[in-house]
Length: 304
Image 1: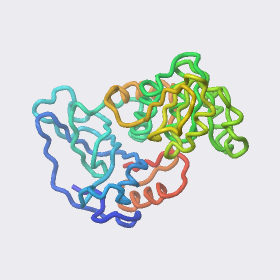
Image 2: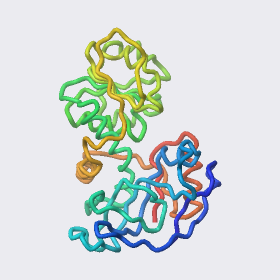
Image 3: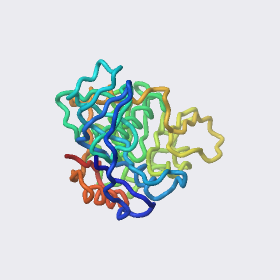
Image 4: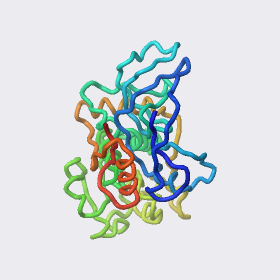
């Protein structure tokens, strides 16, 4: 069984083909034949060796869609041939072993590529809106990083709740975000959002890289607002603010989030932006990580 990984940390060229033994599921597991993998910034960070305790050799990858080819003895509801998705580990491989409880069945009208593009950004966005920010109808929600994979889903999910949504991104993304139904767009490369939107937001959701510029978040927030950010903290302030740091949580399970996200995607109430379709090969994974290392527009999907 072929997989794609690395024996040392570094740039995209560290990837190589790694032969793995055949997978055998335990009683509560299934083995899938991989059809699509979604690349995430977490994959890039791991490859660079940010966590020196990462075991080597490493088969990376967290977002996978495939068809069930083997079923453990205790699994009764996932017959062979079922198309499933999961947020997991070691997904850059021809076959992946999954806990049956972690899998979500993909609706018939979604392709593997559509489904896989939604996994990590969708789970993050869903939990940001529904749990960390707890967005309510008629609130004014300001989304920083609105053009990114997570941010554009935060925009759509907040609109679906019934909030007024203000998107912050660069001017080149204005048309796409307007098409997603934002109530106001502010181009940070043309205007200062902290000035234009001073004291406007009931909720600030900051999913820009590293939760940049907490001072601006505070400036845009109303008194007693909620700020949910991928940053770990906020600057000191005299405002009464509820701060929620967005992080991995099981308060809403990944499976529950994915089930709802797939439903919305399948009925046309959610859109993802797939920018790159690459072959499921060593060259495809190397090219995908070269794209991860630079500014890019849209999800990077490796597909068969």
